[in-house]
Amino acid sequence: MTAIRAVRAAAYRVPTDQPEADGTLVWDTTTLVVAEVDAEEIVGTGWTYAPAAAVSFITETLTAVVTGADAFDIPAIWTAMVRQVRNAGRTGIAGYAISALDVALWDLKARLLGIPLVRLFGAARPDVPVYGSGGFTTYSDATTGAQLRQWVHGQGIPRVKIKIGESSGTAADRDLHRVALARRVIGADAELYVDANGGYTAKQAVRLATRMGEHDVRWFEEPVSSDDLAGLRLVRMRIDADVAAGEYGGDLTYFTRMCQAGAVDCLQIDATRCGGYTGWFGAAVIAAAHHLQVSAHCAPNLHVPVATATANLRHIEWFHDHVRIETELFDGAADPTGGAVHPRVDAPGHGLTLRPGAAAGYRVA
Image 1 (cartoon, rainbow, N blue to C red):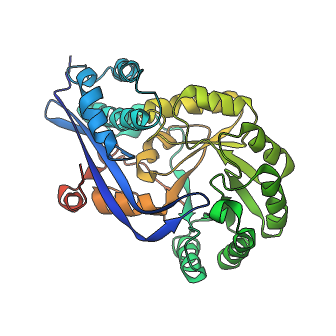
Image 2: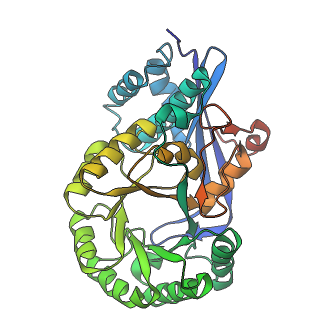
Image 3: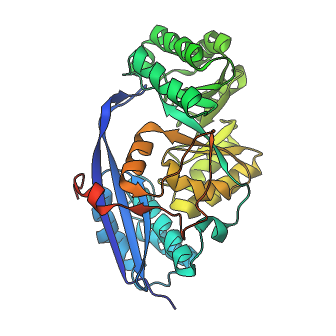
């Protein structure tokens, strides 16, 4: 038995490089919660993007069922964590905490074995496509254009996404202006995606999709609230663009309901919310059973190994905020030049290591 000796967690609050907003939320900081697990002088690292309260949840609620467990028996530890949070609720803070620890546990196991995590999982492909994601509604035209230009013409990423649904769908004319701007900047060959973050009503989203048709929008993310499965399905049946949702999924029941409702063309999964890599694989199987592809939501570097191991993967979201944080605070971040990233095969685990010096100035818990 290889017993887990210690569990640690810390939160780091990183300011955005400028104010950001989407269709339904405004923010100026992003909080990274990092979990670490130790066994035999080896450290496994996982993380999530969540309120700093996830730190105390890890240390006060989950540490007891992780410490002392066999580091190689991740399914048993994962099940114990899920049972432990019964009265706290499986999703939300509890789900974020479980997710960070599960990723840390898989990283630890691979490092104990001395192999890259993608070799432990088994690869389904040599690399994974990415799409540039940002284009916040608070951006000026100049800022939006510069960001899109860098992705498509600077880094060769052939698919990009901007935020629309500004002010909960009350600024549709500006949304359409920004979509047209994006198409002009990226040219005719790159794929253009939009994300309303649930800012529209269903019929409004259909009308907007029709007007966006001349700009060849291929992906319409959360045109309505992801809780409105009937609305998602209505939009999906009425428009040409693929409808995507699922980023808030915290358990397998959530993903099953969304797929059974025929609500999406591509299921989004976020391993930092749905129960880590263990939860990811479960959700990907549910999608496959409904003949759907999956797309990784945010936390791009964390998703690279598990996405590489997923046969029905479409792509990874190369999200501006998280790319900044993961590049600054971790060694080993991936390079998206050319539109795809490769899993680390030259280092054990997921290949990323927190830089204590770089992170220290942002620590809040």
